[in-house]
Length: 164
Image (cartoon, one colour):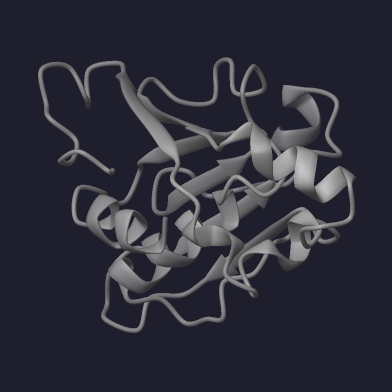
């Protein structure tokens, strides 16, 4: 997921919005960490769960990365209250599906699926919890990633190669 994030960063520029969806432990934050590395932003890029949004300035003169965790938000109005500079930043929103109506004319949706066996092992106590998964090698499990572009920015534009 990290390597795919670095590759995806090469297609992103100021004003781009990326919406990530997938279950806990799917690799949304790891993907965002890779995007941050690819954009050359100040890190570390970690989950903004408790602060809702974190801005990582560019170290190379490019666009900053705004990393949003919309899990605790209940509406697009709450997202709007965060006063994010969508026009001058690359904005990555975890758990943002259905919350971005009217926020942007174009966006990328990245849907991440991970094997269900990881859920079963985690529930049985044989695997780390979702927060620890990336740190202890659970991130090596294969993922299925579907990238879909919406709006004029992405019309007819290949985003990146096969993430697998």
